[in-house]
Each structure stands twice: as C-alpha cells, then as structure tokens.
Image: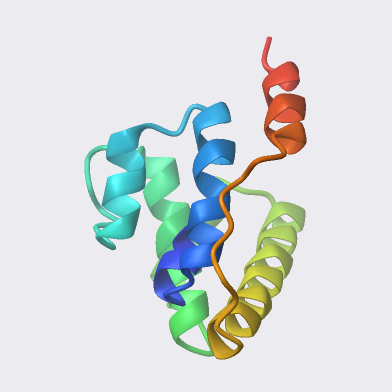
Length: 121
C-alpha cells in the first residue's frame, strides 16, 4: 500500500484494500498509509521501519543509513532484497497504471483474499 500511496496509484490501493483486510490490517493503519503518516501510532514500530524504508526507496536512489539499520533489526538480508524486488515491481506497475490511466476495478474475484484467509491459524 505504501508504494501505491507514494506513486498516487489508486488502482493498486483499491486492489489492496480487501487483501489488507484479510491480512488484518486495520482501517486506522490503512488511513495512516493514505495520509502518508508513516510514523502514526496505529503502525507498529516494525511497520514504521518497513514503510520508512519503502518511502525512501521510492523517493530517492538510496535510503539513509539510519533507515537501513532500523530495517535490519526487523528483516533478514534476504527479506530486504525480496522487499526491494516487491517495491520495484509495484512501482513499475503503478507507473503503467498512472501513465496509461488504467481504470480502477474493484475486486470481484476474491480468490487471493480467500487463499490468504486460509493461511491464518
């Protein structure tokens, strides 16, 4: 959702609402994301570390040492690389959507949401 907010891609944001609901992201957390209030108390300290990393990755070629060090307390090196890959994929998709004015579609096929819900204990 952070990439969608930072790239102003309503398509990504709309598609991720039901997925985030299934992953137990609260309305307050989504609202904080939409406002770019990434230090909001609704976000856990680990969430804040991640969204700050995403924000800096999207907005500049390098993240600050402080941001990177903070994320390393939360994620392994492999997870950081995978996070960068996900950020890049969503950034690219957002630019396709915003440049080509892709019409927002509301999720009607909840297969991925249902699959995510099945993963919960």
